[in-house]
Image 1 (tube, rainbow, N blue to C red):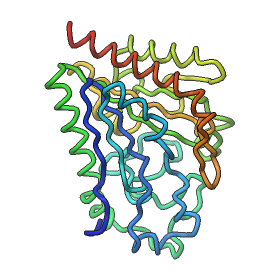
Image 2 (image 1 turned 90 degrees about the vertical axis):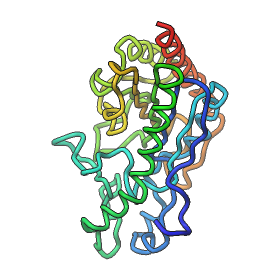
Image 3 (image 1 turned 60 degrees about the vertical axis):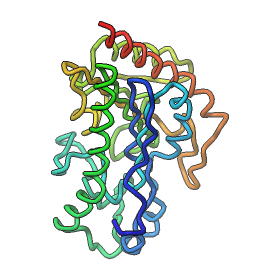
Length: 272
């Protein structure tokens, strides 16, 4: 957003036909913007915390990893650029959110961003992230003939604003089957359902956001899957949002099995 801001993303290029995207992992808020936030919002509580650490094994699989640096409170990289709701009729946060997941205001004085500010943030951060996402998918597909996009997310397990009760632990989304080969989706669901101690669902409350829906084009050889995980599966869900290594270590093998299955699918498809 300014000359002192970090770039909108960090890319770790890989060698395999798999790209792991982490659009909500960023925590950076420009100081001038943070000054307008409430104390709660400055803690950026709705971050997908510790995604890089949780998915560290993906580098060993040869996956490319694209990590956002800016908080979703600056601009939400998993929303359409025009801010259209992905879940009509349900409560959602916007392209430049004005409230938290707990439905509390982000802006202390109510000075929410106007259209010009939203456009500026979109142009400065959103456009760059998506340009890199597209470029990396194109590179992978050109090299392998197929690409799998894994959109990695996490969320608090109990959020009355968005869903009743406790969320299943492993929420796979393929835009109701439109963003990914059905056989791959079912294989991933089977792995998730066999994960002892965890619950799983396919295309439940979370069917995939803009990234999954926009880039997933299985007929063109690009298969996109979103995984929305409960944060209690690997971390502390309240401040200070600590990573819990022993808890995370129990779920990581299941994540690795899913990503390995996705890679096996891509490798098989590239040879077909």
